[in-house]
Length: 166
Image (cartoon, rainbow, N blue to C red; front, side):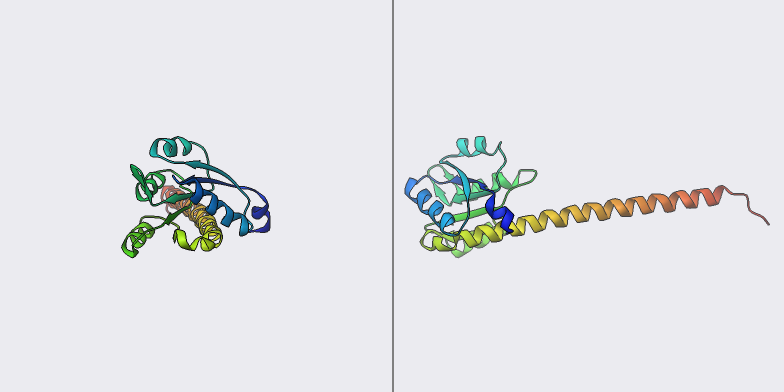
């Protein structure tokens, strides 16, 4: 993450039902040198309402009363430009973690290893920025190819309309 980006507070949506776990996660981000503006939500309705605003990152607990981090990930992935999503859990099996990563989670952490949170967030943000840049480049390349194809087709059409000198 660039120095300029480190000075701008990250807008973080934190889906977490435990105030203590929320405070621990935010402390780890601050220890890692990240400045954050955070909103904590505890349930699906508040999560969906919060997603109507722009976020740089979503951090989600895995196990919530009546809701889950996996379902939250599915909701985020339905967005036109989903922010990076980091899944945090006190009890996540390897199979669930792998499934979450395959379904678009940027990373997953165990709550017992929150010291990895700031580096995981930085990595997720960098990967997201790289993916966005790749998509912009892909669109520019496709547009360039379309323009070239249009010029070639136009050139061929003009040549076929010219009278032949035989």
